[in-house]
Length: 300
View 1 (cartoon, rainbow, N blue to C red):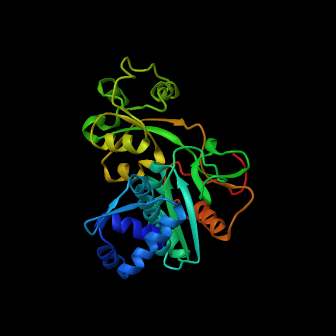
View 2: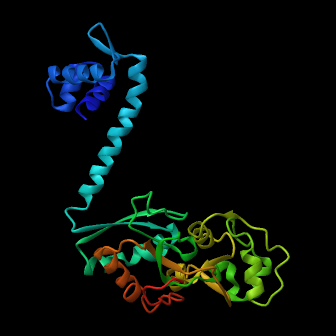
View 3: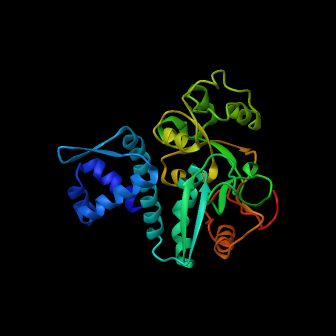
């Protein structure tokens, strides 16, 4: 570490004296670190030109990786320091819209009952390989679970149609005939499936409208008045409550699988068990439409 730090500082500042000032070391200590690194590698990393250190080709090739290594270690240290000596850290991979629209607004409740547990959340759209990743668990749709995992259903996906009040015509389903229909590019037949669930013939222009990849983008687009959108009801509860979105029609299309807590079958640390109990018993409030939480422990 000392040698890599000396390499990066000298490359940036040009002299051992300036690098020493930046690192809190003497110039001779910096020079010793550089010599040790060059001896270890068997190549010269700097050329001395007019009392300045100039990177050789080998030095230029190495300094970029050295900077990346030091930055990664610094980021890891800051991440650990942020936990402030917590008794346990849970690293969770979470679908981004579920995290933003449902989980994060409720996490203060978990912090109140489990202040010793810190959560490290990362957005993750694809299936999680727990053998090749640092995650303790994931909150994703159950159909993303890999073999060798335990799947705990949390909330069923019920898809409803919503739009901004200026477009919704009071929630009359006939309003859809004249509106752009926001498309989810990863589920291109969603509108056709919803019309079928509603017992309706699809609108002639059901494939016309802006195409967006994630529910979070679609939610923002609907609130901005870009058209009608199909969204899980658990994601739009706040928007319906504050009037920024209005539901159109009463039809609800079941999603392909529930949202679930997924973790490796080989382990279930106490902090994860505590989070699971909170998710199942306390996280959903009375206003969470469609968030019927299932009992713990079974496969969906």
